[in-house]
Length: 306
Image 1: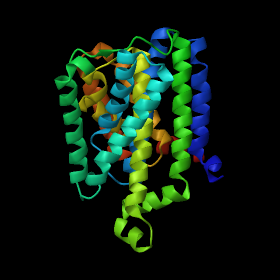
Image 2: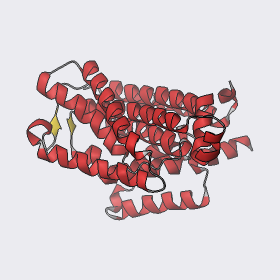
Image 3: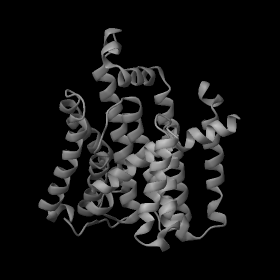
């Protein structure tokens, strides 16, 4: 149980416990903002498993998110299936689509894997526009059902989902398979020479990342009541997911959630600055990435250890 002895684990536990009390003393607007931030935290944690441990630069996390979101949303919009069934199908679609993308992409080296994932996002965007009768096109897709209209319920669900996702992903990352995955990400040739199946472990990481991304994407749809290219599949959304993961701390999993909450909260607090808010948040993120390579969680763990 080495996980229980790490400072980052206890920092995460204390943060979740403190966050659980927020519905009792903050406004519904802040709860709504944090609800979205928690789902983005899951996006970033799932991305960190693939990049931080497997060493594969996925420039298209929104491809997996979009498959899960639109897969679940279309089923509810067209056939009014119950939300749990829609979420399950959306998650499976994200995994299948992710594996279909990963199988050829993992055969290439260097930046080509990232370029393939980026092209996949552009293709998905075009498909949504072309098949607008099914997807809602540029206007967006609406769903008749939502998880809840109560802000507290939505908040606790998002917080609980993020906490459980973080625990599972961290356990996977620290398992023997996770250690092999990390070794494969650092030196796939040596890892393969030791007898480990590098391709199998990276495919498994991609499948796990796709499952969590797709499920979180579906939950966002049934929280917001709508899905659109601009809110879920836009490349700027993918950039935000990536920055959050690196900002929070690469190879920490939980740090990615911290980075996502920081980015969204900071952007909201600086909204009065108008167009400068994005510049300020981006500048702060750049400074942290440059001067604190371990990220926000690594910095917090270092200070707590002292």
